[in-house]
Length: 292
Picture 1 (cartoon, rainbow, N blue to C red):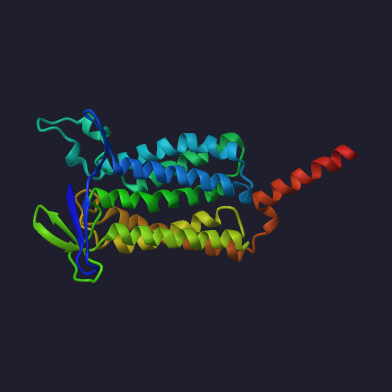
Picture 2: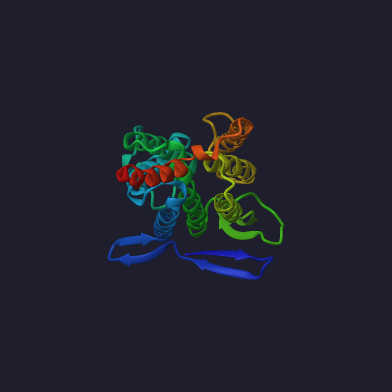
């Protein structure tokens, strides 16, 4: 049981990481929250798939591989840049610790990299344009990130340095009681705002080319993550350097995405080239050909 306070807001919360115990087996809120986020993400993407020309069955086929692959990638990324936690006292890799994720230890950029690669491979196999599929998956990714940060909150992790801001969070640490930045909340709210902005782009017909939503996501999330990562006290560093890996990737992906967006928009892409429009046109032409 952990006690978390928000002294500036007059709130005190008592958090239990365990949601349910079945004998000696514990089900943790971290896993429950991630699972709920995944369910919401799937339902939303299945509902919006038609807006991008993606059928529900095709999306589910991609998800079947991308979801577990993303989790594995997120774990490997965390282990690679935090190896000291997964080495036995006498040397050698502690495989049991590597697969034990119920206490956390997932790095989102590892999930993004692995998941994107898998989406590309499965889309190519199914002969579906990768940019259209990844645009749809972007919404699911954001929903998962929004929910996942609250799993960090229950675990009392992913917080920042000390602050006296009105929304500061009070926690007990190895250094004693500290009042810190609730960076889990910053990122969850940043992703929530990004989700609605991307949804607005889709619903208002502002999406000019397949892949545009994914590039906007990379720019939006990368910029926000770069800023927020600078506040955190548990950053993963690029091996022996003082460079925060996620901060570097965040800002780099933001710049690259903005450059690609500017390049694509400068070429004045034809809306008729969108996969959803091509898909719609193909469906409309079939009855005509049968009549002839």
